[in-house]
Length: 144
Image 1 (cartoon, rainbow, N blue to C red):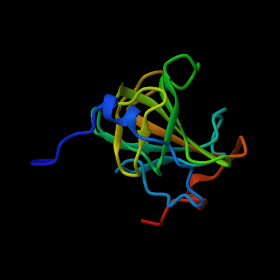
Image 2 (spheres, rainbow, N blue to C red):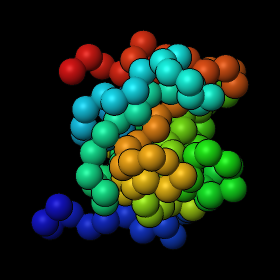
Image 3 (cartoon, rainbow, N blue to C red):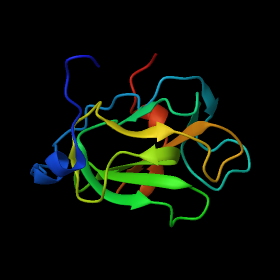
């Protein structure tokens, strides 16, 4: 991103969070869909996007970081983004996290890099939750 300054965590923490009425969902990473919602023996309810270690993971919509860490077993380095009182998105198995709790991010902003923490390979595990219930992210993301 030549010529464009990267947002720092301190800048993000100074932003004010305004819940969006409608989330304009976008893909959180480039890559092949390697796991679908409700597929296989996975206990997690989302999709898996394959990729390369270190590639950018982006916020699927604007929101505030309500969790950033590795304390949730099975998810590795995890980010939870609250978009409004109804929707939350989860980004798991990251290599590095670029945000901290209470940071406010824009849609498309890089929040992490893809990795394989607590996973069998490099991938982004992405979840959409509506009122705490898992939803199929493919029902929300634009087709590609």
